[in-house]
Amino acid sequence: MIPERFAPVLDELAPVAERFEAAGHRLYLVGGTVRDLLVGSGRHDFDLDLTTDARPPDIKTCLGDWADALWTQGERFGTIGAKHGERRYEITTFRAESYTDDSRKPHVTYADDVETDLGRRDFTVNAMALELTGGATPTLVDPHGGAADLMRQVLRTPLGPEVSFSDDPLRMLRAARFIAGYGLEPTDEMVAAVRAMRDRLHIVSAERIRDEFDKLITVDHPSRGLWFLYDTGLSDEFLPELSAMRLEHDPIHRHKDVLTHTIAVVENVRPPHEQPEDRPPFDFRLVRLAALFHDVGKPRTRGYQEGKGTTFHHHDAVGARMTKKRMTALRYSNGDVAAVTALVALHLRFHTYRLGWSDAAVRRYVRDADDLLHELNVLTRCDCTTRNERKARELSKRMDGLEARIAELQAAEELAAIRPELDGQAVMAHLGIEPGREVGEALQFLLDIRLDEGLIGEAEATKRLDEWWAERA
Image (cartoon, rainbow, N blue to C red):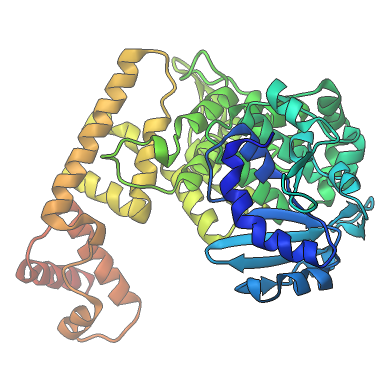
């Protein structure tokens, strides 16, 4: 009996199924869509993955004028992409694929039955299919017990884990996402296989590793997945900084080592749907990445100071450099690298606020954070994992106070758009100089005045500029 919640998707797919059936082909809804429908996730925004015995040229023929658009970039792997209305579809020929020992790309061969296709998929919970052709009632095809594993919350591979991870080593990293995202428990055989085969991840491209890691870091509760990466040693193959943090005791967070604290901070960064309505929006993925990297410099900066104990001087600056290097190696975009690196470099700035900040210091905080201000504030709030409720309340109160002061200054001075009161053209005209280094120095002088004193008026700014220019002469 197919649950009632399947009905909207089945109704949507009926016209496609009729086309394939009329051409003598079989068509199945497959993979994560079937899994999500079985668990009743409530999602309706997913792309629909389908598999068929039809070869790619026949798939294109069956889709005909039903599809508003077709994508054939994946045709050599047996996949045709299609769009109908607002929905995207992928239709893939039954296949069996594997990686050679030194290849980063799969070698694809086609199969003639859906059971073979399901056997080469990553996990049993993804190795289920719903046949849409051959009868009025769709049939669930579940040769590896994926539905039962969903109920028992077990993560297994359809074939032996050694076979599955040999076919595609990225599945070892994907396992972490399913452990975290669906609360599944990996079998002992799977854990042992990851530990034994983790070095095979090196044949997978950095881009695929990055994309899969982003999916893990943005699940609602990623901590179990991150601990799986550490416990199996898999993180050493692409993110060795994770294990390094386990070795360092953090005296500030006495009940946690640095890695435990770091993973707790990542968890503290809650997804947008859990944020208070009065909080400004922020880039969730970037803050999660910044939370992961924010203390990455501590192992390299660990020291000892008489009377203070263990220290981590300048771990923010060192960590920013390490973050840039690692994210670049994982092929993150230049924008992502710059944003996360900046957040790591700035993550300690707030903690001097307890000493009291002048308006000038607030202006500089806003200017340095620039368009990452909300992300920096979220990271700062989340970088509090103390069990001491009084300390947690104090930090939250100080952050509230800083945000209130920022709002007040922004209302009065448009902080986010702070610029010198004279622009470059005005400086050159007034001083009678040509474009060059001296113009930049003059603008920096005027900007420092603006940050330190706020708006002083064009006349006063011109007077100060004259005094500065005279001293230089």
